[in-house]
Amino acid sequence: MAQVTEADVYGALSQVNDPDLHKDIVRLGFIKDLKVEGGDVSFRVVLTTPACPVREQLQEQAREVVARLPGVASVSVTMDAEVPKGRGFGEKLSVAGVRNIVAVSSGKGGVGKSTVAVNLSVSLARDGARVGLMDADVYGPNVPLMLGVAHVQPRVNVNKLVPLEAHGIRLMSMAVLKPGDEPLIVRGPILHSLVRQFLQDVEWGELDYLIVDMPPGTGDVQLSLAQLVPVQGAVLVTTPQEVALADVRRALRMFEAVNVPILGVVENMSYFVAPDTGVRYNIFGEGGGRRLSDEYGVPFLGAVPLGMQVREGGDKGVPVVVSDPDSPQAAAFRHVAEEVARQVSIEAMKPELVVLGKKAQ
Image (cartoon, helix red, strand yellow):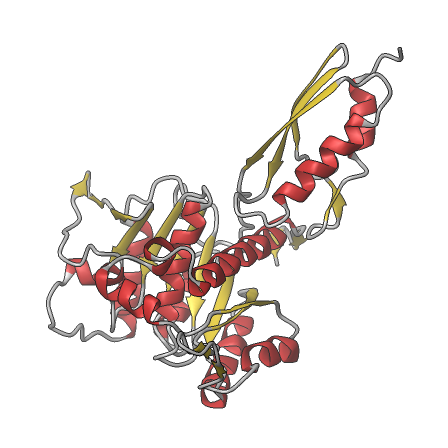
């Protein structure tokens, strides 16, 4: 019987391609801890995200190509994930321990941006990622309420705020620092300082993703975030109706102007299915989010249907991906999380250009 070698195994695995990164898993460095003992072969495949939607497909392909080698008696494939650190941009600050910063934004209020940010964060965490959620919507900070920690105060550890924890994620919000109904009245320079403090003076720890729930619009907070830290990309939330699309176009152009990649578009409140009849109603129009993504050549991350479960979960502090994981809404949010993780990995794996001694996008 032929004796299989490590070179044989690597050669076979080079036939397996990542469909998003368009390279084989050997060139991408995904193969770790390869062992060949007689006819028994074992190795790990370390992907760029625990939320990889083709995880099982890659595992099966890797097993099959190795099993076909002469002399192989058994194949053990262990799947793992290590989220790559996002690319740096110029002389911006880094946030200790945070690998990727993702902004969730919208052009206008009322489209469910915070709901998307919360369920995206929790979905990524339930897939095995280390996730933080920074509530930068300083004028309407409701993330703690939606996660059931509205009345919990953060503690301080050596001059740094320790994030609250809920449903597997870490979070920080102005709502827990300034509780009650008193409004926050601040202008540009103070907003810039607040954003900087939330990034630098919070003990985020080791995170694969820091999701930032932005205020609506294209104002000071958005510009401060883009200026201060390398944002791996922006997720744009809209509803199908034209008035929301018009505003999200402005948000898209703003992020492009400050060199923040657009990870894609989420169409929230996409449609409603009557529970008693099963009839679908396009209450806010149809297909607007996909048209927007086609218009600008950015990914369409998914459509989330309307449902009472989403509102009830937010009011009770239990996101729908936890309270009703089998619902169509929860399934849609999980799909969005997979697509966001995929796009972050694609952005992180893009080569960096060096211009006049400095890194450039």
